[in-house]
Length: 182
Image (cartoon, rainbow, N blue to C red; front, side, top):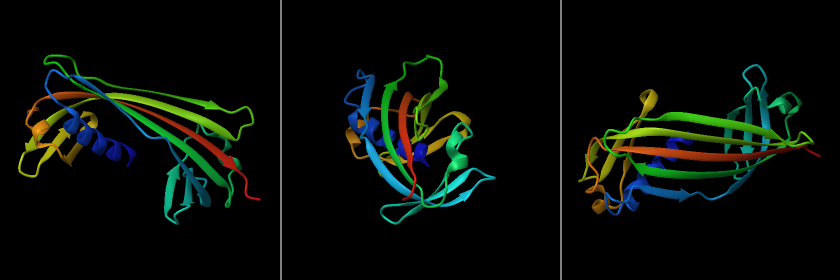
C-alpha cells in the first residue's frame, strides 16, 4: 500500500514539475509524520499486529523477523512511529540501462525499545499510456508493477511521451518505539 501511495505522489509530482525535457532531475522532500497507535491484537504465528490509530481506524501490520522485540509485545502497548520519505525523479536518457535496486538497514536503540529502519529503492518505470483528455498517465515497472494516475498539469503531460523512462529513487526512514501500557 505504501508503494502504491508513493507511486501516486511520484506520478503527480513528476508531471506537475516537469517544465521542459531539459529538466532531468527533481527532488521531492516529504513531510515527517508521527503516528501513535495501540496494539489491539497479536497473531504470533504470522507475525502480524492489529493496531488502532488515534483516529479510531484499524490496520494490520506485518512485523519482520529482524524486529526481535516482537515476542514481548502485548495487547495495550502503545506504538509511536515517526515516518519520513524523500523521492528523486530523473527522466532517463534514451539507451541508458534500466535499474531495480534496493537497500535496507535496521539500527536498534541501546534500551531495545526503539529502532530505526531505513530503506532506499531505485527502479525504472516506463510511461506506457497517456490520456490527455482525462488527463492521466500509466507507468509500468519491474516485477509486473503497473500504476495509473490523474495529472493536474496538462502542459507538463504534453512534454512527455509513451516510451519515456523515469528512474525513481525512494528513500524511507521509520523510527518506531514501543511504550508499555501503564
